Image (cartoon, rainbow, N blue to C red):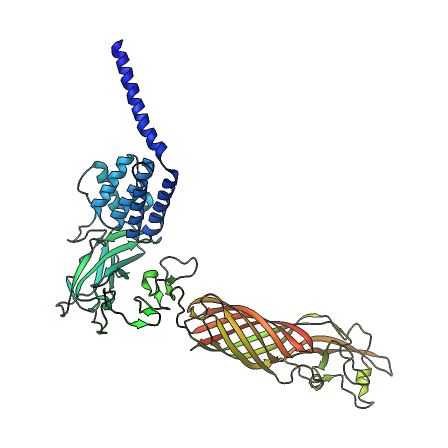
Length: 576
């Protein structure tokens, strides 16, 4: 009995101790610290790791682990942080020893912790399994034999040496199961403080190759490592790393059997510009307005990611695939070069909103001007003259007197009517990347063919278009060399704005009373000569110096009342 009581007491004490230990760990976890740690973890893996910024991912995870300390995060949370740190070490930094140590710590905190299947490669899985077994050395996953030097998913043998200022060829072979969409080499020449990159192109069924920029190849060691990405732009294959890169020795003298890619000539040496090696500490770069000359591609050149550009900004269309090419843009707060002078040609077809009118062809018997107060003038297309003839004697009054009034004909129902057609030449000057000032001059077609309206001072007698305009370009404006640029404009000038409506006119013979109907009459409304307008549209950049403006203009012709018009316009502009 005493022995049994002693055993129950021991079990109770053990249970109390365990509950105290684990209960204290759970109770002491700080929700705010855990939330901050999880936020850092998400940024590290979803942003930095997927963007191949492995150093930044490692720093964020280590910061989260430090913040958690011994008891501010639950064991499960700390286990996931250690697990992801192991993934970064193995999959990004190619440090299997540190990766295995992180995995081991994760498994110690939570034996049930598992890898994220979306971030797993065969190499990561092998290191994780080794950590599970508690082994020291990591057994590499099955695959092709690797050459001496940095290991990875690619088969690659670096060239031993290369001449200064001569591109270093890089050839890799991939036999893995992942489908690669892009392969890049990240490199650092002698004197450079940061890694740059160049893309390898597929040159065979399993081979990818490319040549480094020759200007970055300086006497010393040329270091590089390789990364492969799938169509989601996720890193799925590596060879070498920042900490364990491949190395090619760069010499001042030509090398025997010059390195080259298969079936390609050996790269030639770049000219010596006399400048310091790129990014060399203490080297004074060429000074340009606003600071030192940046490295990378200049504004307007094609790019794949931000690291390709001097501005560290590669602009792509919204929704573009990560592997699509974009255009290097100007640095934030700095406006780049742009073409200031643009000459072009446009065409436009006008639709006018004409007013309603009664007795539009009848003339006043005393003044010989139209009796309608809306400004219409009639023209007989069959006779090729104004209608009716303006009387100067009794015989000429017969045609006007024969027009029946009131009548269901001889009237205009107001609304939209086809009007003039314009052929214009344009000149615009970019005062800023977003503001253009210019002028347009051209020919107006399909104008009023008669004479009496102009005799009465209505409209504009010359078939010309003279216009001054100001245009505002949205976004990058003239700095944008591809894609679509929206714009808006205001304008003013003098021109023809004539619109016609076909009507019928009843004529009654005074002697016989016989009625006839003329169906060859157009009633013309003569707008202008002045006008003001506004509108907008888009400039489609066919190239960096050719734009295709597609727009809609609204204008108000002033003079003979107010005649509203709308005009679709299309053209082409060439920049200089």
